[in-house]
Structures are given as C-alpha cells and as structure tokens.
Image (cartoon, rainbow, N blue to C red; front, side):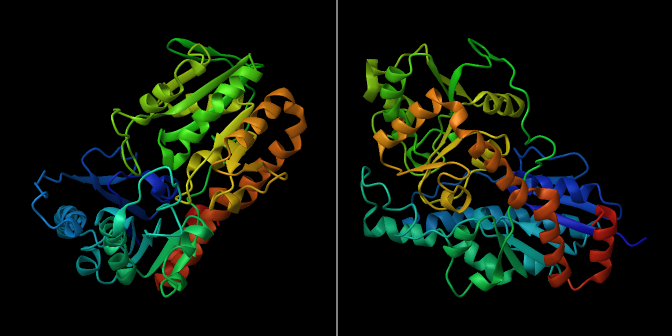
Length: 423
C-alpha cells in the first residue's frame, strides 16, 4: 500500500488543526508529522518535532522590523526541524501551516512539490476591523498603524507560497486583500457535534471554592483571556444592574489574566483587576466568580448549566467558544459585530446586542434569566446551526478532502483518504 506523509506546522500544535490531524492520524496509509514549539501539547499518533527559539534582544532594531525578526528566527528553527524530517526520508505530500509566527517561510523551499495549505486567520488593517473600533482606548498613531500593517508580512509571503488557503469564516476571508481572496476557501475547523459538543443533562459542577447546580440562574462568559477585545469591560459594566435585578443570579467567568490581544491596562496587572477597581462595591463577590482557566470537561459542564451565555468581540477572529455554546443549546447573547453576525441571527438562533450598549446587554440578560423558556426555540435553532454548518465530520472534513483532490494533484492520495475516512 502507498503511504503518504502529512505535515502540520503550528507553534501550539494541534490548535486549529486538532480535529483534522486526529482524523488523518487514524487513516490507514497516512503518516502524520508535526513541527511545533517546545511547549506544544501534541497528540497521540502524531510524530512531533519540537523546537526552541532563543531569546534575542530586539529593542535596538527598528520598530517596524522587530516582529519579522522574531518570525525569521522562528522560521530558522522550523527550517532545521523540516530538514531533519527530510533527512529521515519524510517528504510530505500535504502540509498544513499557520503562518502567523513565521513558521511557513522555509517550507516551499524545503518541500517544493508539496501541496501547502496555509491557514488564513486574519489580515491586520489600520481601519475597518479591530483597530480603531473601541474609542475608549488611545489611538495607535501613524507609526502604530504602520506596525499593524507590517504584521501581515509573514502571512502574505505564506499565501504566495501556498497552493491554497483556508479561512474559518467568510468575514475573515473577506478582510484579506481582494487580489488574494480567490486563493482562500472558507473551511471552518469544525466541531464534534455528535460527541463532545452536544447537549447533556445539566449536573452540578464543583470548582475549588464554588459549587454550581442545575436550576440556578447562571450567566456564563468565556474567553481565553479577559480583555477588551472580547468585550470584557462591557460585560463587567453590565453586571451591577444584572445582579441588582436578579438577586439569585451567579456570574461564571472563565478565562486567564494574560493579554492575548491589544494592550495591558495602565496601572493594573491585568484587566480583571482594572475592572474590579473601577466597579468596586457595585459587585457582589459572592456571586461573581472568576474561575480562571478550567479543564475542558468542566467548561462544557458549565455551559450546560448556563441560562445566558454572553459572547462579545471586536471585529476580529471568531472564538470556538461561541460555536461550542451554541452546539450545547446555550442561549447566546452576542455582539452585533462580524463575524458573530455570520453565525448568530437575531431572534432566530440567538440574540444580538450592540457591542457598546451596556443597558441593552443588561436588559437582555435579565430577561433571559427571568423567562428562560421564552428562548427554548432559539436554543434548539442554535444547535441546529452548528450541526448544519460547522460539524467537522459532515462539513469540514469533506471540504478538506475536496481541496486536497483539487490541489494535491494526487488521485491516489485522495482515494486513500476517502476510503480510509469512509467518505
């Protein structure tokens, strides 16, 4: 039997490639490899090479060049890892890569005949997306805006080298330059809606110091990190009224204190402390629970208890959490910002509120807590949206196979994948 090597390159592998890599690793005749940074989790069945990037002082470099300097150093380590694979006889026919950290830069040179699929997650612009959206924070200035544009350098080079590219949402595809959009296909990472991401009977959830039970008025908010990009400041400012009007409500906040996007607050170690200082005694600490980062199973169990799940975001990359919440039949109260509006249809499968309208957010959450059954149809429709459009097995995987069929120029590879994956 012919055997084909597939390579995934992502500093935090598996990340967005989790479902696809797992599926391919279980396909007979496919050998899956990965290149990732030292701290990457990895996954069973995948031969992974880890690399380290040494710390180098970049403060003396021109500000415009610093990011690309760091990306180039990472690319150098990927080059060494990819060359080691090649010396072992691993010549991937198919490569998936996230270009956001410079890791794609050497791949076309080392593997000139591979089908390279780059993950076109986001294109930075000084206007029209995240930058300048929130007037509460100081503008970047011309030099800052130029640095924003220059963030795209590695991604643009990756798109030139790629055979094809994928973006997880239509809006994320549309933010790329028009000249490049024909190369980018909309293929979401996909959810396991028949397995993990499915409604379950709510059960009590215990986290050190907290216990949440079915029947409680629970509001959930989830973000990788608690920061303005995900509307954390807006959500927090809506809480005093929600707590006042719903005295039995509990607010469950999941997320870390690091800064993933944007800037850290002035005079505070993180945005959680900044917002607590701003709101002071307007919040009841016995009912506002900062849970930090929790195990995935705990996170899903909390969503199953949720009576109202709030998801706010700047016009930016769409989080998995909103889709997982919808798949679990949560009532999603989302911001009317792209790409949320691509998924949530107001009054049909969720509720949309203006991002900055604190009173509208509080109104909606209070009503959802008071009249949960009023939204039962929206909850059901939310899950159906995810099953119909974002299920990995039924939607994302066939889209991947179709692209491989078109761009790998290897009918044997496509036939092997289709037979091995039962498609």
